[in-house]
Image (cartoon, rainbow, N blue to C red):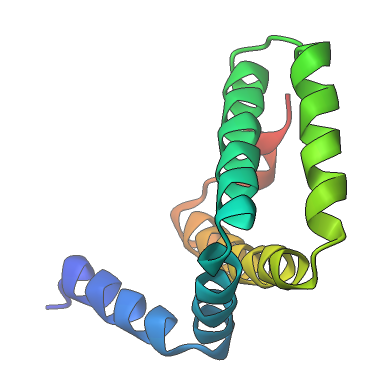
Length: 117
């Protein structure tokens, strides 16, 4: 009998060995070496999380937070280390989303319907 938890742990270890994860981790380490990058990237994550939580709760995004998010994003795009890290994170998150969709499909859960407001 297959233990799904063992399979999940195996998947997690395989994800850590994937090129997407290795590149994400490498670029994150480089981007976070710079204190300004670290501060801006951490604030970007906080803002993104707050906005996603509000959207999930049916709230409209705060205009001031949106503007701050846009300013921070613009600053980070000018920095090659931060920009490369953000793109690598996006690629790794896409891999995770694809896996989640495969699992959702197997369980009969329409993942796309869950993400639409």
